[in-house]
Image 1: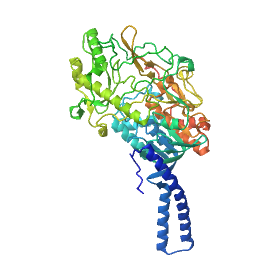
Image 2 (image 1 turned 120 degrees about the horizontal axis):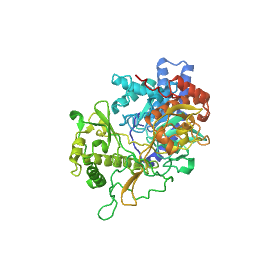
Image 3 (image 1 turned 90 degrees about the vertical axis):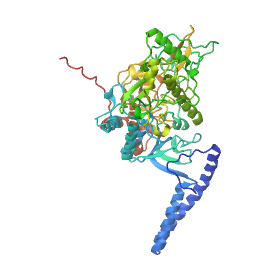
Image 4 (image 1 turned 45 degrees about the vertical axis):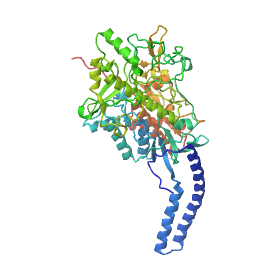
Length: 583
C-alpha cells in the first residue's frame, strides 16, 4: 500500500478507476472490521491494566488501523463541513467565508493555482461602480493595495493576486487540495436530494454537509443532476429584448469593408459559414473566450512573442486585409490599441484584452466547451493559445503588417516574471460563460433594469450587460460582420440569494455561486469577478447557516443572511454620489 499524496497530480484511466473502486469496496469492508478490532484492543489494554510497553504497542496498532480506515490503495476519505470545488476567485472567497464562520472547509482546485481569472491575467478589474463592492471582495482589493503601499489597488499583477488568495485561505484555516479534479463520470454520490460525497480522479473521496460548485464550467452541478443550460435564450423565453441573435452592433465590429473570401470563393480562416440566425432567436453558441495576456515593454523582463509550433500566417489573412483597409481609410497605420486593449497594471505590465473586429477573442472556437469532455477542453485551451500566440507573432513579424504598428507591438513581450511554470503564458482560459444553472428563480433582464431590488439581497452588481461576440459570418453583400456583442449600461441592482440554489427537488445541499441561475442577458453583467467574490461570500456564510440549522440551502433565513453580510461590510444599497460642488 502506498502513502497517499495530499496534492496528487495523478491521472488514471477509466479501467483503472473501475478496478480501484472495486478494491476500495473490499478494503473498506476489511477496514470496518479492523477499526472495530482496534477499538476493542485499545479498550482491552486499558481495562486489563497491561504493562506500559504493551499499552504503547496497543495504541500504535490502533493508530495504524485507524489510518487503514481512512486510506485504501492510495485513496483517502476526508470529511468536512463544507466542500468547495473550484479555486476560482469566487471559490476561494466561498471557502474563506465559510471557514471564518467556523466551518471546516476543503477547497479542491483541479489545477495548481488559486484565483481563476483574477490571478490568471485579469488584473484590470471590471468593477463598474466601485461603491457597490464590499465585504470580502473589497477586502481582497485592499489587501492587494497593501502589497503596493496603497489603501486599495484595482489594477494589479497576476502573481500578487495569487499571493493574496493564498494568504487569505491560510489565515482562515482552509484545507487546500491542488490537482484534485472531479471524476469525469460517477464523481458525485447522492441520497435523494442530498450530495453525500464527491470522488476525484485520483480516487480520493470528500464528504461534506454542504457542497459548493465554484468552477467556471459547473461540472459538479451537472453530475449532481441539477438543471442547467448554455448558449442564448430567445427573446420570447423570458421576454428579454436583448436576448438571442443580435442585430448589427457597433462595438468590436468591422469599420471597413473586407471580403471574407479567397480568390476561389472559399471562406477565409476565422470566418464561420453561418447562417447568422434570425434576430432574437435562441442558439447554443457561446460568447468568445481569450487569454488575458500579461505583457511588458521593460527590456530586462520581456520575452519576445513566441512563434507557435503550428503557425501559419495564412490564418490571419482577414486581419491583414483589415489592417490594409484601415490604413487606406484613415491615412495612417492602425495603432496597437486598435487591435487589442493593453490596459496598464502595476509592475509596468499590462492586462491585454480583446479590442476591435479581429483581436484576441477566438470567435467561434469555444461553442462546444460547456459540454465538452476534459480531453476536448484541453484541446480547446490549446487551440485558443495557438490562435492568440499566432495573432501576436503575426503582428510582430509578418511583412503584411504596417511598419508603424509592427514596431509598436514589437516593443512588448510576455512578462518573464509571471506564469513562470507555464512559459509566461496565462494558465486560466477566460471562460466568460459556460453552463448556467436553472434554479427555482432565474435572474433575467428585468432584474438588472427595472426590478432592481430584492427581498433576499446578498450583494450588488453594476457592470454593463457585457457579452463578447459569438460568431463571425459573411454578409449577403459580400462583406463580413461579427455578431453577438452586447454592451448595455445598467444602474446598480441587487443580487438575490435565490440564484445560488438549485431546484429543491434536485439538490438541497449544493450552492452554485459561479454558474448561478441566470439568463444569458443577466449573466453578462453579474459574471464579473468582484461579483463572483460577493456571491462567494454569501455562499460561504449561507453554508454555515444551513449546517447550524440542519436545513436545506433553500430554507436559509435570507433576512438573517442579509443582516450577517451587512455586518461583514457587504453592500446592499447604492446611493448616487453627490455631484462635485461648483466653485
